[in-house]
Every structure is written in C-alpha cells, then in structure tokens.
Amino acid sequence: MKRDIFKAIADPTRRAILVLIAAQAMTPNSLAEHFDTTRQAVSKHLKVLTECELVKQEHQGREIYYQLDFNKMKEIDKWLEQLRKIWEDRFNQLDKVLSKLKANKK
Amino acid sequence: MKNTLLFDFTVDKSTSTVFVYREFAAESDLVWNAFTEKEILDQWWAPKPWLSRTKRMNFEVGGRRLYAMVSPEGHEHWSIQHYTAIIPITNFKFVSAFADQDENINKEFPSSKWNLDFSEFEGVTKVDITIKHKELADLERHLQMGFKEAFTGTLNDLDQLLTNLNVTAK
Figure 1 (tube, each protein chain N blue to C red):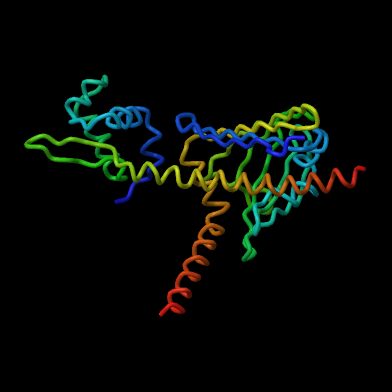
Figure 2: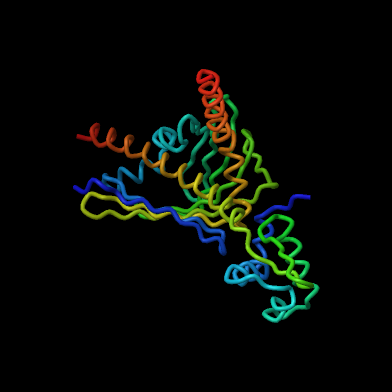
C-alpha cells in the first residue's frame, strides 16, 4: 500500500524522527531514547515513514538502521517548485496588465 | 526606476504556510484594483493557458467571489473566496474553498486562509501574501485540483515531442 507522504510528515514525532536520522542512520532503540514514547510507538512511526519511502532500512548484523531517502524528500520540493512557477507566471501576467492600466490612466 | 522587481516564494512545511512576496512597478491603488476588481483579476489570475472566469464578485466584508479556473480543454474548477476583512489599499483577507458553480462548498477539501498586504514606496508596490493551510497535504490537493491537468498536459506534449524527435532521428 502506498501511503500519503504529506499525512506522514504532518505528524510532529515523525518529523522529529526525520530530522534525527537526517544527521545519521539510527536504530529504533537509539531513536526511542529521544522520545517520551515506547520503542513500539517509534517502530510504528518508522513503518509509516518506510511505507511512503521517506526512509530506508539497512541491515547491519542483527541491527536495523534507518536512514533518510533523499530522493523522496526532493519529490516534495518538486511540486512546491510547480506552485512557485504558477505564482511567477501569474505575476508576470499582472505586470503586463498593470502597464496597460498605467498607460490608460495617463 | 529599478528594473528588477523582487519575487520571493517560501513554504514553511511545519506550519503548512506559503509566503509569496512580489514588487510591482505601479502605484498601490492600481495594484489594489488589479487584486480586487473582477474584470482585472480575470486577466491575470490564471496562469496561461488556463483562464480565470469570475461569475460573481461582491468585494466587501462577508461578500464572496465565485470563479472558475478553466482548463484549455474547457474543464471548470470552481472556487469561492469569502472576504473576512478589508482595509482599502493596504490589506484584505479571505477564506478560499473549492465549490461548484452554484456556490456549494466542497467540504471534502479543507479551506485555506489568505492574508494580503499592500504597501507602496516611490511608485513601487510591495505585495505580501500569506496562505495558511490546515496541513501540508492540502497544499498538494490545491495544486492537483487546480493545475494537475495543465502540468500533465505540458508533460504529455513534451513526451509527444520527444517521441516525434526520436522517430525522425531514426
């Protein structure tokens, strides 16, 4: 099942997890130490983040390390970039409209 | 006069807020009219090749603008802007929601809160827009509702073009 990325990062704990593992890959146990919740709760959050491919797992011996999947984070920025483009186009059109209005005013 | 007019677009993901800043080479009353009169709004609000078509607009506190973004294929995406505060030539606020052409608000899609500030200095008008969404996901939905077709359209054209080029090259 593909989860909604934006639902995933809407949660403050999950955002905090992303910030932590952005700095270095971490195990669920070491992550849990940073939060006032159980290891199970952290694992659940990690499951959500993994399902929408924001983080990826790496097995090292018996431990599982979680790290950020930068490609996915870039995807979010990609559609924000589209939104920026819309505003740019819109305002360029407004520039033309304004110069027309100014000419009429004179 | 400066020929570079500042443009700034930032998104605070943690508060799901979009900040848009732009300077215009015109006096503030003109810019204000461009944002608050439907005849002018429809000339620039929709990025080409889309069209903005305002059906009704009552620019006063408690009043509304009912308008459609019309895709090149003729599909209409209706929205309502409900004005909540107006201070002439310096500020207005509205709540934006998706709707149908009979002004029935689409409750599936959460509304967004807009604040627009206008200020003029030596013939250059600065416009500061803040758009607050309930969650970041709403922002993506807004983009999808309004413009996905347009972007997909452009990408399809590009695909087509690339395919044609490939065929010619062979």
